[in-house]
Image (cartoon, rainbow, N blue to C red; front, side, top):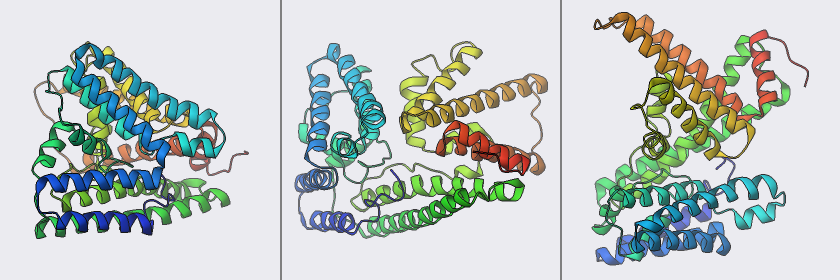
Length: 390
């Protein structure tokens, strides 16, 4: 989702959310509260996505629920259909269908998130988790309105037990939830300002040279962090008010001192999903070293394409994979050279590692926002101090 998307700061969306919370507070029973959440989740998705998209989501949810209940031989089929649906929505309808009306009607809102949640559920059932027998409870998981647009990606075994025993709104949850929501809206507002600044810097081409380049890299880095983290805070805060705890999705990623550390702090729900359902099934770190590094590149490429089917996302994902393999390789080399003796911690070394990490992360964001040819020209202008011909 974009910072310019009206859903985030839309008065109607805010009113709908707080109306749902108010209605929730009036219901006396846990069963009634679950019904209230489901009712408003359906209404929220119908209002901001439309009936066609809602039908598509319900169809995938019903397929996922039914295949998990029928038996293990249908699980792979359900997983394949979910992934195929994501590919069609993200690639064919978005990249090939040029009419905005076609895209608006047929690309479900939040498709990347709910497909990954469905695949997670099916994979866990395949591994032995008892499938859900209550369809309405499963639908609450599927359409939970705070996270349905932009995550975080939830885990069924963590989310559902909390929904089974919903309590009245507590003052402590209300205060902490409103605090998180406030942070989220501040982040989203700031992201919008950085977005405008980024557009102006690009239009006037004032990013050349070291100083202008560092400012430009800072602007795009802050924009994407504040945008992604802002919605996560809002979603987590809304869920917190009704007593549902969703794990934090960002933990100060720009304080990372390595690419590995960065991906342990950035979009944590997505990183953990790819680790559990792609990296480990591919062999993870149990295979020989070069194969595990190849697995990392494959996983990061998938993360890139998950954001959108385009060359810039592909290149960005590959760059992240290469960065992780270099980081792991360097760690392995240092371990061999140092043997059992651990190198003493040094503040200077920590600062250098932070600078190198942030430079890699910031430069890679250029490829996330712009097509490779334009990204390369921007980076060349930053490094050379000269504007490149476009």
